[in-house]
Image (tube, rainbow, N blue to C red; front, side):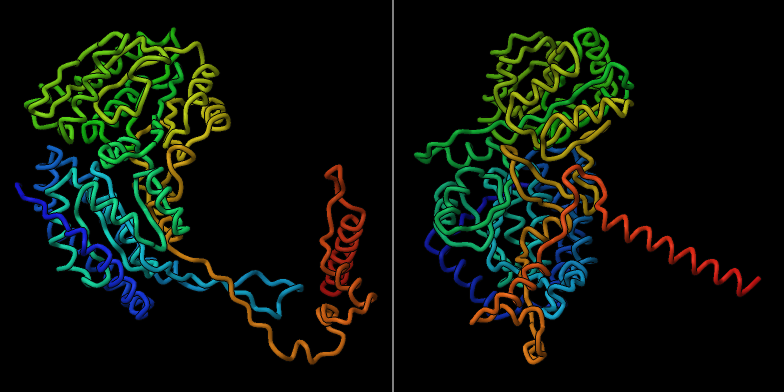
Amino acid sequence: MSCTLQYTPIGDIPRIRNELGAVFNSGRTRSIAYRKQQLLQLCYLIEDNQERIRQAISSDLGRPRNETDFLELSGTLLEVKDAYDNVEKWSAPQKSPFSLLWFSLSPVTRKEPKGVVLIISPFNYPYFLTLTPLSAAIAAGNTVMLKPSELTPASAALLAELIPKYLDPELVQVVNGGVPETTKILELRFNHSNGRVAKIICTAAAQHLTPVTLEVSWRSVFLRFRDLNCDVDFDPGKSPCVIDPKCNAKIAAKRIMWGKLVNCGQVCLSPDYVLVPESFQDEFVEALQNAYHELHPTDPKTSGMLGRIVNERHVERLKGLLDNTNGTIVFGGEVDKEARYVAPSLIRDVKRDDSLMSEEIFGPLLPVVPVKDVDEAIAVINSMDEALNIYVFTSEKKFKSKVMDNTRSGTVSANDTILHVMANDAPFGGFGASGYGYSTGKAAFDEFTHFRCTVDNPNWYDLVEYTAMSARYTPYNSASLQRLVKFLHPRLPPRNGGTSAMTKLWYVLGVAVAGAACTSLAVLFL
């Protein structure tokens, strides 16, 4: 599928932002019925255009058709349908628990839309990482400026064509373009921003105090803003695999190799490197070799079972990582710049300071890093910026707990790769250098929602003489105010963490009353 991506005129971008603001201010998006109708239309946008989406992704990324069906089409449709099914429940006002202190205020939390939101999507999953946050933003009642990645022009052009056909064209407006257009967008004020351009988005958002949700990939930042004079320190988002020698090596290797080669390794959740005990490296490398040959019995360059790198710049970067590694290439190593092909490659005996450990790989290269034991594996992980995900392969609960308890990451997956992003209503997002906020399920809806506390204190409360809160008024009555302060003061547990004497007394009284009641019933019925 070939196409020419039409960039949005830069002068039109502020007008589009203002039009979205006017539509939001009209109150149109407040209606739950309207939101549901738009979400249903978004479902059918995917349902009706599956073949065109497959062709666009094939043109942009060379991704196999079945892989697109499984991860992109199914995953996106599940998320949009989940938002459609739950928008009433997610949007319902929430009453605070009853409290003797504040019952008269009737505190309620309203779930209100933030306003005009900006979604800047990455290239690697041009529909899942675009339409999933879009569905959350619509469910929350916002209007949306949508900026697809210019690195996937066929997908960006298709989105620009389909969205105004299926959705209210005044609800969502697509802006296409490269660095100049994105720069103009970031000059504008939004009520929330979602994207993967990390520090540059945060810097721009700070000018307007705009809250952001980030799934950080420094590679996306570099490619978008390479032509800008920006002082940006790029953070790698390397997701490690920690291997227990007692794990099922065959299954672990197969799941890791599948996760590494999905979308040709261009996945934010891709297993980036493997930490394995030195004594187990030979056995596990052999298991990874066997898994690769099982998954790709014929040459993936010609079989159609492996996608392509998004552009030549990425190919050059990956070739540089391979050329400069001091590890041993077990298989692979081929690079064809013209075909945008980088062969799946396994590299063993990789050191901590190797080129392959210097940045997020975002390609089909898998380094194996030998360590002494799990403690050294944890030390390696903690010496780097926070990963988007940590993969742990073990059948031992203690091993899993040790890794989870002593590391930090956006998510953790035990004994599998990638799939947890598709788990309905499980929050998916980064932590620290790997991003913040959430992009799936109700957690994504909450990102695009303002939680607005409301109270309504009735007049009669001041008409009742000697209510506790009447002591707040001046001129102060010291005795009344002290009673109020004492009433408000929470009862703290003993410093040693034991049970207070009053709690014990109430417990004894409760047991005595219950015993007396049982005795009375026994006498009555026997």
